[in-house]
Image 1 (cartoon, protein in one colour):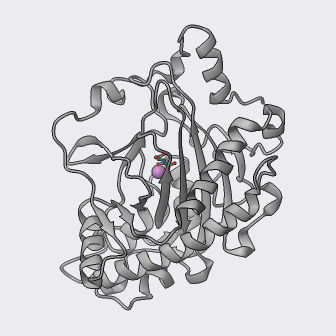
Image 2 (image 1 turned 30 degrees about the vertical axis):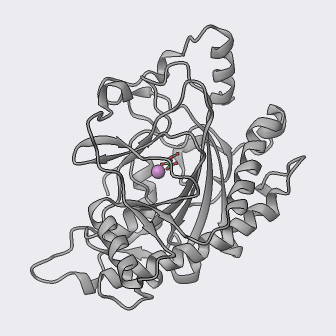
Image 3 (image 1 turned 60 degrees about the horizontal axis):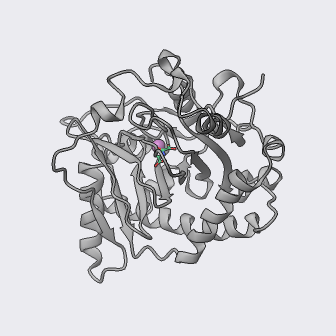
Length: 344
Ligand code: OGA
Ligand code: NI
């Protein structure tokens, strides 16, 4: 079955005086113009990883992960030009390759399978089965960037003007190190051994899956959504955006905007860290809005346990007064239920 790319729909809308197909109009409880909180809202925490006081860095990360489930990091050590090149390469795939070239990378969309179960890498438009038959205003590209055993360079785009492979491998090295550091800090915050969370999510078998989100200009951004409200099923997600704001999180029942901070990287706590910590750390509910004039893009890297890793509340964080709040189950079973909207 032919998939309709949002990028193509957007270009048709642009030439048709702004008409938007009705399946992109969200119901009232989702429309950004009806649900975005406009009052004064606190900004999500920003942590400087290059600050001199190490225990203060730990404290800030731990507090942000407990209260917000999301924070931005600066002083993270990922060079600006590495991120800029990553962005240039991703943009080139969507904007410079002819559509028929892009379709050679199309992923199998059928059956709502899991991106963790293999065979789900590539260029795509629909990730999850959507309730109410609504569509999200976004195309994407998915592929593993680590560990080496998971990486299939055959699906990585080959581009005319940039060396996609070198650029992406360079970025991947920094992300692996950053995630290591985050897991160490989060372990300390639970009074565990520094390696405890890393080991619990599979150690060096932790999977790093890059997604490139491409949100074309949208004729009716007030009533459409890019990615609909969700928590990430990963352990942790590391995201770089372009300079077009659009990420929103639910905080104290309000949808609030995440500010764009040049050169910052966004860290999301995902479901698996919430589960391992027995709810001490929060997996953040988030969504993305789109822009009328500008292309929004983002590059989340989902860091997830291998499929056969059993994830449940760590025994060190549960006791009689604090019993397990989550079932222990294999990550691949968790992912299957999440993607197919089945109870866990
Ligand atoms: C996602 C996501 C947010 C964004 O792809 O899971 O939450 O800012 N993206 O694009
Ligand atoms: Ni997400």
